Length: 405
Image (cartoon, rainbow, N blue to C red):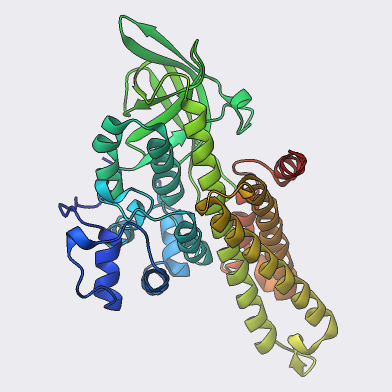
């Protein structure tokens, strides 16, 4: 079992809605059979407020520093609180015990997570694994895996790319062979997010009929997992080597990349939300510092150079916020513009986060270079996020191609 596992929730109703009803009293008359499968505007606001209250008390800077030093980089107590709110099951269909929410709610939740540098496997389990399973169309696998993922008792992740770090079909370096009706995997999956935590691995592998999705439950025979060093201490990545490792097929043979592509699109929305949350948080902290730091007898925020930098950063933050939220809305509505909007958000939010975090270091002066100051943690998260699931240059190229298409 994963180190961040939470007790199973036996309720068959929507855990997020029930939690919101308790916190915000917005569904006082709701019964399990009446619960909606999507969140209304009021429910979204209640979810944001409830999550913000939780993270402000349970994911402080001291908590983040303590958690990121642990091997799992995940606080079991906080994960249990998140599970009780139904956050790991945000995207899980209501019939499997989740909230049945979509990209808009996901982006909103990840903004709050990014603002406090939350250490958790939400990106892997809540987003990548759930979306891949949902898109696979495998009803049996969904019934077997999604309820426990929704309650946080099972943590899952998706293994896509190989050692080259290409988040494309050409980057897949795992192959699958079938003997006597049993599948086995061979090859390397690299940069697997939270691979050390997962007790369910979803792996996209090449087969004679095309890329196919498979399930592996570690520890498994002939499976070697190696923790990778990361620039961002709040993130965990792993390299997984398969050597004739038994696996179970998920979905139809040859349809694995369609499910993987859907998962990566949703992950880019989540990552954009994380970047927006981090951008706005580090900007707010920097502005507050500029108001209170006295130099030459006056606050440094009164200096013209600082004002200009702050104005530029505010423009970056607002533009990134608009890009992330528009992409989430476009994907939610299945708009034809969704692919281009996602690519735009991917590079715009990454660049805004990196630029804002780097400028924050400058505006804080020498204190920001010390280990005790949080500014460098945001810069590390920003630079790591900017490489995850493709660089800004890659997403710019995709954006141009999608516009042409």
